[in-house]
Length: 71
Image (tube, rainbow, N blue to C red):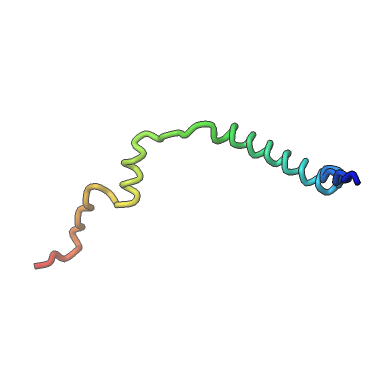
């Protein structure tokens, strides 16, 4: 008794449509990645600017004349 080959899943229209949509989405994502994210751009003095933003200015702010000084 010969065994019948099961039908290919690609014969189902829904499977074909989902496969085509996934391929189109993959192509669009790879195109976006190639166009906008081709190589990293390092800003000038980037680490200095980040540390200043996170830790505050390197030099303390001068006290104004209206503030009281502790004894």
